[in-house]
Image (tube, helix red, strand yellow):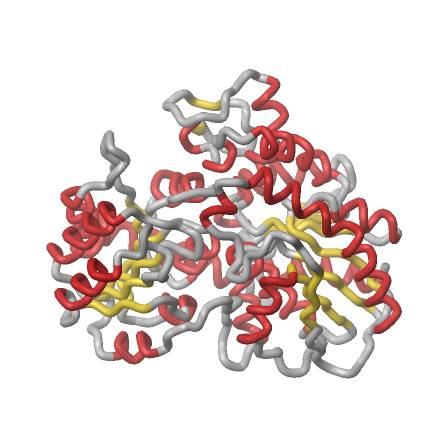
Length: 472
């Protein structure tokens, strides 16, 4: 355990995210904000293999009592959820229940060593932490790391199944999900379309637990999703559960950090790309990142490379070592040599600083929710390349609902062709459609940043929540 600070405030919060980059990041932003408040201690729990990696890059926020702790899990994921885990979700989440005794022991241990744990803030998908909270007679707060729209889909899983809806992608319209407009079956999160019996059981099992929580904190802002937010707030209020949009959470971190917000670092970030960006013209660079989990085939990589070279624009591309299936070193080297005058590649980038940089024109993204929010909050249009999880749902919102992004068309062989890639890149980087997206995302940027100001809705909701926690 790494401990920071020597005080023992009265209000001790235990935070427990799902061990994936997209889940840990908003939880850490939230915990930094809580720990910066007088009278709070936060114990941030990770599984052991990920904790061991995270501690190498950890920089404790000054003047806070925020501690990193760990519990054992037999499933080893030092860099967080990976492609294998995402294709074996049922098996993985079943394995996580082995942590129940360890979490109970940890709550007891921390309560004795520091001060009594007063509440558990845990990821929605760790629903069994509610039983641990109940055992200790303390409230559980759910952190929802994604959109309010996603919560409504999850909330309707029992109805979807009872209504005979097969969770497979097709063009039929699902009209029973309240709080959202008409949704094609193909827009249902990809993880719900998987043929995984264990995962289906887990999905049905977790839904009722959201109504047992004292509060649900959502990493979104009200003006982005008013209909979904209003529906969920009204629905959960019937059972006494609050539903609060308190995002974008990384902007909360921006307010309390002297160096600006930083995401959880599970890989070495290459800051050299920032100096390269300094040399580029304003709004000229395409930023490409497929997140921490997605993989692409060599064939798809070549299609992207050809489309990218055809437009002749400067680009910054995050090419994780495991991104390309089979790790074709020669293909990668050849591409880097051909594009060295226009492009810059890194194995991992400081994304928050990249998206804030004035040279960035657009973001080709896997559409993980953090990347979507970070792009919106910095006024950067998106090109959507969803790979898994709920990324296809996010892409639908970005393209069709908010009109701040564009998508690609997959061929019969599953590939997105170089011609379509080039066409979409040109439309967004140079075309009228790109200008319209930029105008739309600038409007949302202003709303996102207004939400976390002292008189903003997200800031006020979080403040009310913490005041309520203080008074318990």
